[in-house]
Image (cartoon, rainbow, N blue to C red):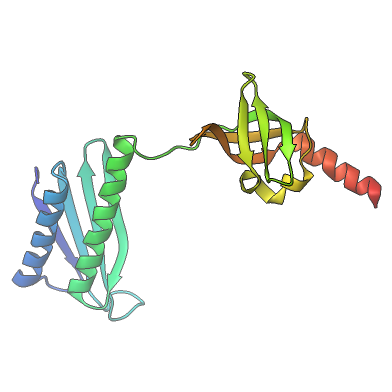
Length: 190
């Protein structure tokens, strides 16, 4: 680690073997991600809070551009609490790395389209986006079991992805205008 490891204890005195256990877990974390600039571990012994007999660990990590905190990791024994908290810290660092490398999918803004063709017996259809392209969609892509209620010309919102044979809509949702008109038509029938 670039800065020394800080180990604090509450409600008990940290022994040399316990301090070494925390240090070795922190070194493994440093081997996993070598850009940790600071690591502060606070261990709270049993008896200091309402959950008697539980060890609680908090880890504060400083990495480039971010402060990562792991809290509320508990265990019946000291070793269990340390193991669980450093496992959670590893997961938190993995998430941070994915976000900084932009490997996390961010949901795209839904696009508007119009249903152009429906094949109800075969369970699929096509819609046109604003650029005039035809995009395939399957009945399972339509949210709220709305495939049976779709008609050609209906306005929908959709998310596009690349399928085996070209672009396809992974999620199709009837737009609010369509939902409102369908509800009013149902109201007139009753």
